[in-house]
Length: 208
Image 1: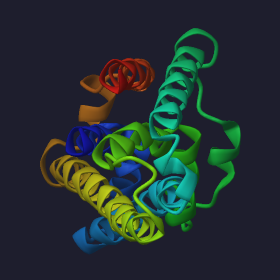
Image 2: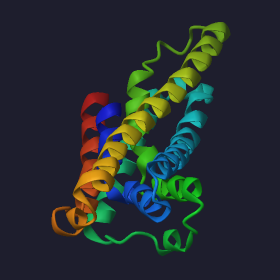
Image 3: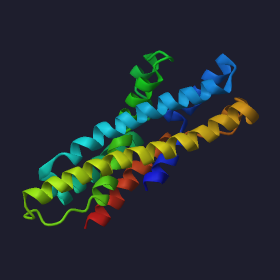
């Protein structure tokens, strides 16, 4: 699920790969595409980490593991339903960020789309915790392990996003051109909203 959601984020133009193509076309060099992809990946990773790391450091999460997972699932369903039914446009403030600040743009767009929130149920499912009365030492070990898992989740997801988006960006830049986007691409916003709802529903099913 981590890799699949990362690939989806990478393929989705809303997460920024067309900006890397734009950078390469303006500077007329392929390395500009790679540099832009790196900035986008960094912003995405920071957004994932900002959501996941606090969960890894909350000791009470060991006691309320399932409750938090269910709450995150309900929040995902609500967010996805909101996008599907009421609001299908990108937040306008994202258009006001200068092109040179790709990391900031990527960070904010990931937060605005609920990309980090989507990883929370997956992360909680990986961090299966034992009974809460295992003692202070066990809790400390669990927190250390959970922190490393949170970082790994963010890294793996971001790598999948960067590779999938990078492949498409490179193909568009080198071979198919911008007409491909105008004639062949389709809007993934509805698919994204539906995927939030689906992730929430699957989390509820597995949590019980």
